Structure formats: structure tokens, C-alpha cells
Image 1 (tube, protein in one colour):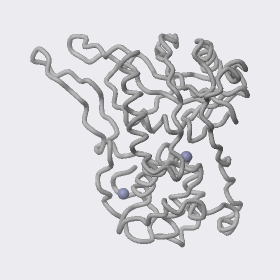
Image 2 (cartoon, rainbow, N blue to C red):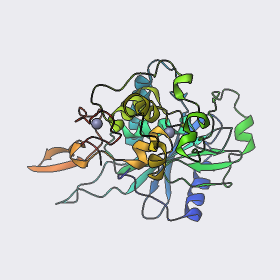
Image 3 (cartoon, rainbow, N blue to C red):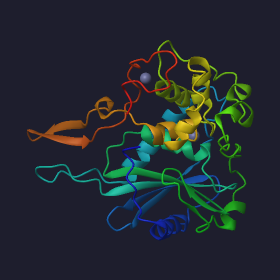
Length: 315
Ligand SMILES: [Zn+2]
Ligand SMILES: [Zn+2]
């Protein structure tokens, strides 16, 4: 995402801040910690915890409702722990803090749908504070991993008493690790299971003229990401069966799964972002929040059949 600005400069400061957040006393299996971290000093100013919701994995009937409920929860929390941005006379104060999300759970120290739901939750939360929603991390008894920054490590870990002390932790269903890319495009048919085999409900075809990106975005919002290029392949199979190099091209751009296509490979063109939120105060226009991702995409501007290129909404 072009809107993601890395808070940390490397491993050391990242692990120090994660350790501090995990040591806050709130960390236990089944909760997610939201920490307000000051950008300039990397000081952890506040930590709150919420029960980790079940991720909207495949088959959940109303994932959009789930995202929206999580977004509201996150928005309320951000407003609670981060001060409103200040107006300094002639300009809007800078975003001074970052909201770091730390999912505490058992299992593999790798990003899963549990963590990804927070990316979407923050994206649709639109809170009006001096804190910017930053990266999402998972901390387990075995180590930690980051979602956007793609860092991982073995310290800090979730303390053992935080794991055994809570029997009510939600069960987390594990998905397969990212399937390796086939050695050559010819292997694609056998190397990777087709998503259509797994989920019947999410097999909706692209709309007439709809481009790859608008389709993947629409489907991921509705059904979530299964850590594969499920919808990208589904699109290719329906619209551009000759585009056998699609997975490789997307992976080269950082899109190893559908949500990463939206996170890394392409971005919505800035002109389609929502305009800044403003209000009038003492005859001046005050900017409450800069440009944001829209809650829903504008209509796809269309591509011709056989193309796997994005339409004009994307760059
Ligand atoms: Zn994904
Ligand atoms: Zn499009």
C-alpha cells in the first residue's frame, strides 16, 4: 500500500516495541492488543486489548458485516487512546502516533486470516485521530511475524502463562502455508489446488468487462483471502485462460495471494481515494483526515476479454 509508512527502522527497534507491548500485562492467548506508539520516540503510550474475533474465513455468510463490526470497534478504540489531531494555527498537526496491532495466539508464528482481518478492519475504520493505523503483528509462544513489513523473529514470544491461563481462547483454524510457485507455468495445473475445489460459494464469475483487480478486490472483501491466488486464478480461468504466467507476474510484484495483490502489487489511483475530511472552525477549513481509501470501489472502467491488466482505477 502506498499509505503504509514503516514505523521501525529495523529488527531491533521493532522487537523492543513488540516486547514492551507484550509485557503490558494484557497479553494472553485469544486477545489482540492495540498499542499507541509515538512515531518520534517509539514510546508505547497506551495499550488496550480486545477479544480476537474469529476471522472471516471461507464460508462465513456475512463477512462484510464482520469487517464492519471490527472496524467500528477499532475506530472506537483509536478515538479512545489517541488524541485528536491538533490544529496549529495555519495547518493541521502531523500524525504523531501509530496504532500497532498485536494478535496474541497459539499456533504458527506466521500471518494468518486472523491477522489479515485487522488490516481490513483498520482500512475501513476511518478514525479521526493523530494516530495512523500501522502494521499488524502476531505473537505466539514460538515467535512473532508482521503482516505488511514482512518481518518475523523469535523474540518476543507470548509468555506460557498467557497461553495456559485462558481456556476461552477462540479456536483458530489453520490454513496451509502459501503454496510454492510452480517451477514453470506448465506445472500450474497440478502444483496448486484450485480454489474452486474448496469453496463453492465464492465461485462467482467476473462481471462483464470487469478487470482482474476489481474482481479480486470485490471477492476478497466478500470472502476473504485463503492465502492463495484463488480469485486471481478464478479470473484467469474465466476470462484469460491463456495468461499462464499470471501467478508469476503477480508474485514478482509481491502478490503471492489475493490480498497481497491488493496490498503490494497494485494500488488504487489517488484520484479515486476519498477526499480529505474537513470542517469549518472560526472561518477556517480544518482537515480532520487526509485522503482515504473509499468504502467501496467505483465501477470498474473495464478491460477487454483476455486481458489480465487492471482497469484505469488501478496503478
Ligand atoms: Zn492473502
Ligand atoms: Zn477494474
